[in-house]
Image 1 (spheres, rainbow, N blue to C red):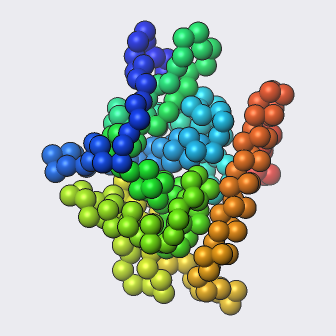
Image 2: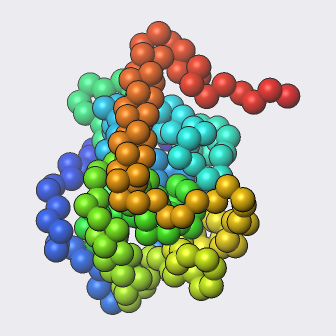
Image 3: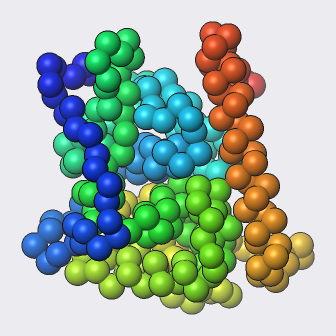
Length: 245
């Protein structure tokens, strides 16, 4: 879909943490699985990719990458475009074209549309991309995008997301550890706890979590560099080869 003249030409303004907070008159937004994946990718790449805002091709590659994704999917560009249209209808994504641009690009509008502080959005994004997690896991994974100072910071973000008039996150009852799931698409992930294994280890210490977060951030930066190099060489598909039959 190609934007008409002047359509969605919105330049996001700086968004203070307290501005645009969710109120009781705001309708609950529900997404389908592909919209959840595309929204998560847009938010993630806003923090990890110098190619952001994303073209349709870059958004498709981000949806289909095998790292930091559960489930792994294989969307084509038509499916991603349909998801982008759905997100635009809900004001969660907008065109980000510049004058003379040859390729249409997209950016997320989630902070404004949902009334979230940045830390809350990062936590929600990880739940969209990976499924149910503990607060410690969320801290480790979200720190790929921006460092979160402590597990307590994540827990406070989770409380805010759960205490809204229309909650965006729920606590999963039972289980060995307290886990949380997103509510934008409640059926997106199974809430069942992964089976325990003999190799399960205790919750990572803060030092271990920091090291893991730094490694994941470095991997994301390396992937971004490879994506730009592949695009320059006209070999964008090299990072997401088809699965062998």
